Length: 340
Ligand code: NAP
Image (cartoon, rainbow, N blue to C red):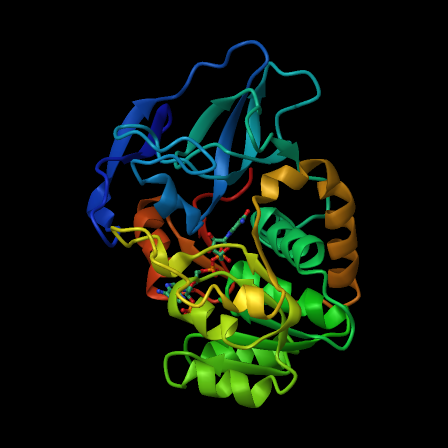
């Protein structure tokens, strides 16, 4: 890294279909000026999130669409270099929406305000299990899924960042947990590390047939990260009063047309079931308690997590693509610098 230069990844063009590295452009800018009320931070780790692909759509989602030419939006762990913001000092570690760039001047506001990382907390984990990822699993499962001990919970994207945590929280609540993930290595992780009761390899097994075998009492909670055909397969096996939690739909993010379906949505009526989506930001006032509870589970060895770390700022676009290629196990992160 040259001093005085801020390397940035710009969102260069709206993808058509599958996002590619060509949709981003590496740019060199001068270091940003720090205004009163701001900190200058140097980023250490970037978070890679499937939602980034949805932010590239022209249409609005729960957040404004990205505009071509702007610095790619994203969360990062960073270290404060200079502070004109009360309460922050050089050397502090923070997590916030700093974008895909090596340095950022930030007041720390926005839908996900900047947070100081307490000493002793592993830095990268604040983008994963002890950050938005873990919180998404926690609130989606517990608040919308309402899992009861003895019930059957099915989680798709089960070896991913959110899914791997959602399934383990369901186990902690005494549920029988079935994961759905792509490939034997991911399924092995869910059963051996995540303590799931079973995991269906959707790339090599018939999901409908396996759900029938593995869920003899049907599905009480379906935590969906992927949408599409896997959602439909799960919805064909709902128990009475089931809860379908719409966390995400990664199988649709690169699709040009919106999903038609689920074609079997009438199963909600038959099962007197509920299907509900959520955005994790809405739980912001409850984040501290949830993080404390999850940190406790980790310390007690009851909650395990994986971080899939790609080295090098220049590899950020390729790291994002890994999510859509199913290459990541656990939270996809890009490491761009060591703390000073
Ligand atoms: P992740 O699961 O760690 O990574 C994405 C995984 O999705 C891939 O590893 C891949 O695993 C799977 N995948 C990719 N393409 C697929 C396809 N066509 N069909 C089925 N599976 C596919 O990502 P994450 O960060 O934990 O996010 C998981 C979901 O949570 C996403 O849908 C995301 O948008 C959502 N989310 C929602 C909120 C909220 O507030 N609602 C917040 C954060 C994240 P396989 O190898 O198993 O296919």
